[in-house]
Length: 367
Image 1 (cartoon, helix red, strand yellow):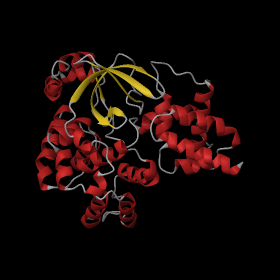
Image 2: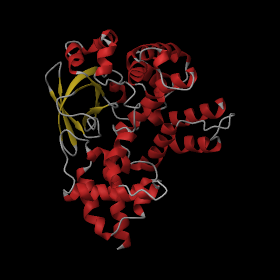
Image 3: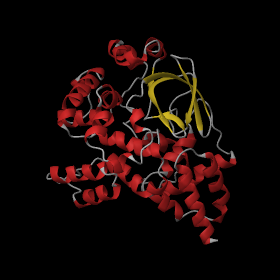
Image 4: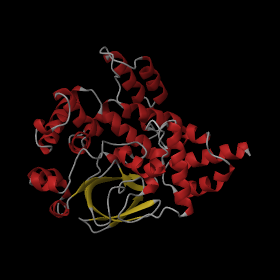
């Protein structure tokens, strides 16, 4: 499967999501008869292909980050080795990793570990290497400030407040207040909690390059005077204290293209609106119906949003952007939803607003 894998990589390097998907579709299983490609990669490509005309430049920049992390290049051999070694150390060693064997355990670290991703892309130059050695002009031209992203420093931040479209943070090093789009970076935080993350420039302002990592208050205080030493602080912090505070570098499940909400978290917001069948199954159509109910509840004010609870707005946006979801929603929206869709378009951050606008057009055509 090396041949198709390299071909799919090269298609992505050209910015050709549809071409990469075509290669994947022709080679879905490996020689062992099992699914060969990572589901997250397929989902990412489906989103790029479906939203290409309206994809914001920062999403293309995030796509580049994912490609850089999977780059198979001699120049990246040592960064991957060092990043994996340190990430495993912070997890407590190989014996504490999930997985049926060592190969699966290491794959889970590569795919989901926050520290591994930060080290490979930034501290060890993986993003710069990809831009220099693999990315084509056709890919880079659609990105937003991607060269500046290579120099984005780590920040120690305290979450202050959320609104439907924005999140407000305080930089604990400078004391500056920072406002970013509400893509869900604080969906699992309550005001006052702290996180490590990189803020990157875009044409519309700053946002997180990927999901930030929640850290304990005491660790944030130790890292804030010199954020460049964030890794040293993490490595020397008592592991028992981290475990007691619920620190988990795998909880963010890697980077996502259009949202900062891990899928299990966004599904929690939809859960109360799901109708489960008698056999216990939940159908894709049932999820679409639940999304509409969640949107109606938010717009009408029936669902009250608490500061210390799960933030439903970015959760709704994340689920709206799931591959094929817009098609299932188009089968269910009615003229009665026109106002709801207009309000959601106005109040949701990011590309989810485009999905609502397209669904509104479906309603108009059916009228």
